[in-house]
Image (cartoon, rainbow, N blue to C red; front, side, top):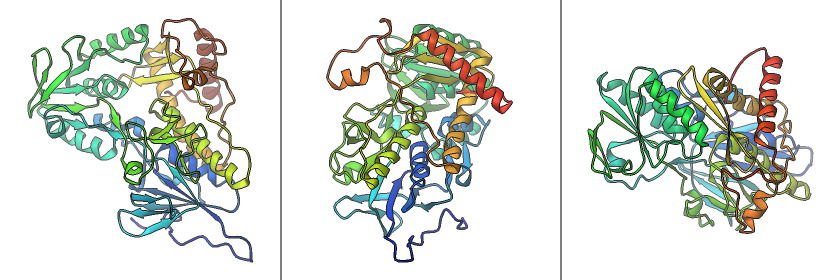
Length: 446
């Protein structure tokens, strides 16, 4: 790939006798990393370098569309990354925290004054016999490309078995069924564990209408995967021309390999300012961060504000200012059910689903608007660093209680003090959708 203004690796040197710039290295060019890199450019005297293994930005929320052939799931970095960010197309093999350098997989090292750790997440070790050999994961562009080739090569009548009933599994099953494939979705215990019972029923109806066979409940967990079948714990054996594994996520082991403290999954352990518990020059964001060993749900919904917060933490330290603590809340979760239908599942701010949801065609529009909105957040911050709003909205003290080890309310419990009731949340979200549509003259979704 020809070099452009983002791939220039010439060191930034300030002239005229002024102080040398503060070098911030961002590892990872996903939602969190790009947001952090863009936001860091708002302060003069800060030089930002982004290290990412791919030359294009991957829209991870659209990987199921890549598999189904309805989107390529990539965007040029020039559309989402600030002009002032230098980009290195490579991976980091090791972080030398003591020396404040990183070793690149392709050779050489990069020095930093501050480091933003935003390596994201990937496929989890399935730990099921045959799964690593015969099942295809779906957490990266490369995996999605391989999976699409496998689906295209399979006979038209072959069953595609999707293992895992979270958003990725549901979206992939619906996308392929809508494309005419015979699909079985193996849920394990329950379809859409995050969903409220009402939202779950709506998803089940849509999957049934698409002809997806949904297996859940006792005995519907996978015990073994072979080249042409999936075996369940209750003894059933399902013929499978292509098996897709979407049951859980893992994170790269870069932090652990570098001698940094991590949680049980391998996420970098930080305090509530997203600062590593080992080194105040290292800040984490996105799926690979574990603030106070109480990480947020892996999602672009969390990654983008975490990226902004990580950048603010670094900039506050550079300026010698007080560093703000984490203050992120959730609005819900959106899932596409093919191109024409989707669902927006509302939630309390502590990410517990409530009974209210939007489904059908309006759900699809909301989903698409949100997917498009992720790029607009990034490009907006690239064009005007600091413009992305980190809203000072309380979650009703739920995170503080969780940090203190206090019990949390259940899905069916009453609304907590400080959290808006579901109808109020719904009204606010619908109003926000309408305002965006009116401003842009479009109808869009997520």
